[in-house]
Image (cartoon, rainbow, N blue to C red; front, top):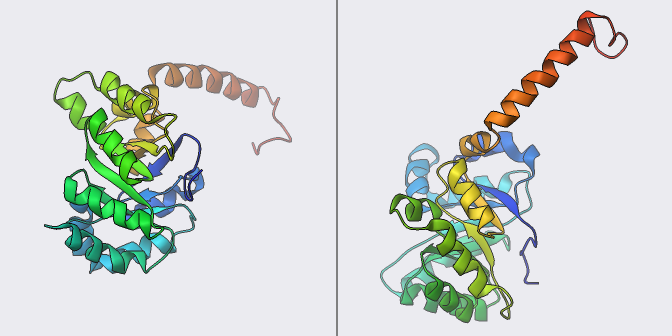
Amino acid sequence: MVQGYPGQAGIWFQGDPEVIKDYLEFNPVGIVTNTLVLDGLVDTYGPMLGVIERYLELDNDGPVVVEVDGDTTEDIVNASAPFQALSERVVMKIPSTSKGFRAIARMKANGRESMVTTLFSASQAVAAVQVGATYIAPFVGPLIDSGADARAIVSDIVQVVRGRANQPYVLGGIIRNWIAADVALRAGCDGVVVFPHHFEEMMLHAGTSEWNATFRGHWDNMVDKGALDGVIDA
């Protein structure tokens, strides 16, 4: 098992570090960034290096995945170096392109972990394994939005990497709601990356609400009858 590979299904968080701080009791596997979110956070917190330091200071010892980009492989490698210097926990998030895969191969040779983003196909997934990506993140939400059979495509991606040497952790990306989260997990993803408010949405279900109301009603009946004296305050 590669360093940093959690080895079990789990929830990863993205978003404002101050918001994530209030959700650390849910024991997220790690934190994932993307440039879209980071572009907004730097307006609040200042330069991107400082934003990543805020994530690293949170009371969570999991990976912090940092997305970078550039016009060439050298651009990507060079942009990654300052973030890698912050902590061994930093994992670089790299676009699914030839230049990106070259950067991943170089990082692998230097003992650093990486995640492939903007991934939509089984062939991209195999290429990512070939160059040594630790994590791959198929984009579930955009597949659903396109009208494609997202569960089938993500399941195919999971299947083509399973059992390969140095198989990567498969993390469902662009999870915009509980439906996308369920699609990713039912397709076999090891985890999903969500904003805290999407995590809250994942906890909702009509059946859960119905039965919680039923059980709470009986709990309140016992309170009214005094059957919980000594257990809760009146």
